[in-house]
Image (cartoon, rainbow, N blue to C red; front, side):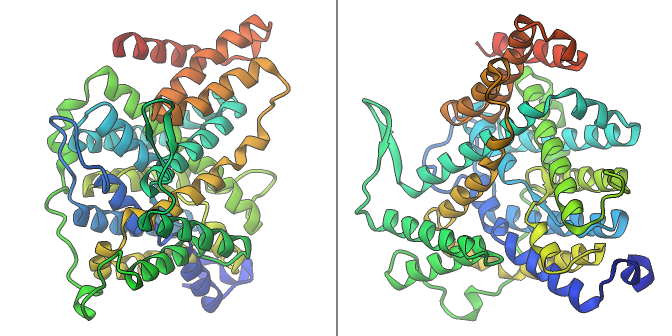
Length: 444
């Protein structure tokens, strides 16, 4: 085992790697409750006609298993200390844009995630993935990440009741004296304090403390004994294989855009996370990522597995840097985290105490972290600032990640050509321009 993971070459050991795996798991354990709550549209009372609510328990199981499978792939195949789980931005896109906005059933959305994963595998194996990523300008990549951050935070503020609908101004401030809203505000404050103090797993601990306070003041029903904390693993039957059953429903313009969005966002998340974690761990060689193909394959294979199980697109998590900070240097870190995800399957009863007020702070904090990419955009170049800004601002305003990407990708070649910088535009961007233009034409 030591030889397989190259412990001696990388200056690590079992104890260090175990602590690193546990640290990463705690840093991202919140996904086990936020992902199911989001996909099950907890807090959304009315659903569009033809759209049903996905089984929250099944999604919990699918999320834990998908995270375990993805992390095992990454640990054993690519041998990186990177942990995977269903992505926070893509689960919001899945629930609020695809299901609520496009009124597409969750079964068909799973088929879209499956197709995006299969395409990701093909692009990785053929080497086309790098060409597509290189074709998309860095400024737009940064804008997509920041826009998703604002979008997720906006959803968090809504779920918390801090931001509500207003007939005069579309949105306004909610009733800040309402006990559920106060509970969410408490969660935000606690999470901010923990993360400011650099406490690993601050988001998860913030959720735990918020849930405990909610129970103490009577806003959340307390678990009645150990049986409501540890229980049987929820069945996958409601979601397993639905991606295959509804495969024939994906051949529409809307689903094409959904699949492209799944694909693009996973591209950016994976590439950025791999480079960030490998750089922090000192694993980059000559500014290149060793075994990059294997890492990308692990990520795409995890998406395929997750969609078949019944959860949204699985991707690499930047929280893996927490484990690297604790000394993790090898794939054994990811293997340890995978073990904890499997163990967490027996704690599904805790879903009942993870209400929208408890998950809202996590969404808001993740939004803050994702918005950090704003600093890397070339705002002093107007031809770049316009498509970047439109990408960022339209995601929360239209309640759609896909729309934000589409608008930004349409404006980019226009402003660049007008500025006389057409030679800097990759041919692939023109293809994407036409695809998204058709998207708006057919959508109208």
